[in-house]
Length: 332
Image 1 (cartoon, rainbow, N blue to C red):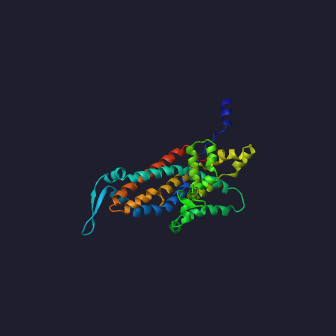
Image 2: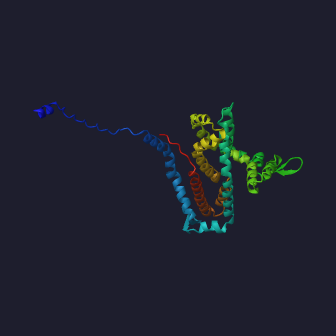
Image 3: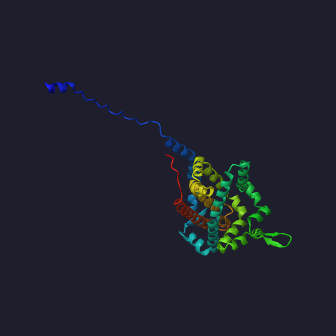
């Protein structure tokens, strides 16, 4: 009897409702839509690369491994010669190797100077001051003046040649001196010599000071990239540093440098490409001169492809060296 009462008073088991099945959204995620938009913007370049530049690239590869002879009745005859053109560029034409070595050596010294100068100017131009927009425009003007038709007109300007060439001579009235005298007059060389930091570092700094005109001209784009990176840093991070008692110097090395480190990598790669492929680059000028010479199309094609592989190798080395120090902020 008691068991029957307990059974009657026991509540009935509650049936658990099955969890609703989530339906897959038919709309693509925001990241996928952004990716498709990016490919849409790149589509004109991709089509131009395959259909316009693609045949030219294939022909240049073909010419680098062959010899072309113009026939008397018109047309030409192509003969495959293997690596003969590459061998001639490396062993026979000694000026190509010499020019290539000097160009790479100058690049190694120019990259740190351009990146450091552009970062320094970006930090200054990011400060709150009167006429900040005007100062930014002034520092970007050399980028505009060094492109297109203005660059061709400026190439015949004697004053520009004196400013960009540290081997030129200037008549100061007391005698003819070189542009290197500008550094000597400001005692910069004497200052570094008195610091006993080594003759190599002293000469490097002196060369940078003598080449400051070219460095400023080539730092405009990098400066804008650094400005964009600096403005993306949240002011709350610097406020937290001030509350903790960190100085401006500590905030620069602990906050600013890590946050803009991806831009340092981008600017380093951009500087390498811009320096090695500019029209004023001595290697590019030498290859162009070989191309315009008699029968130099095949040899210049081989030189160009070797130079291209060297540029890719330098970019890979710079990327591998800087990637270990890059900080990427998580946006979870």
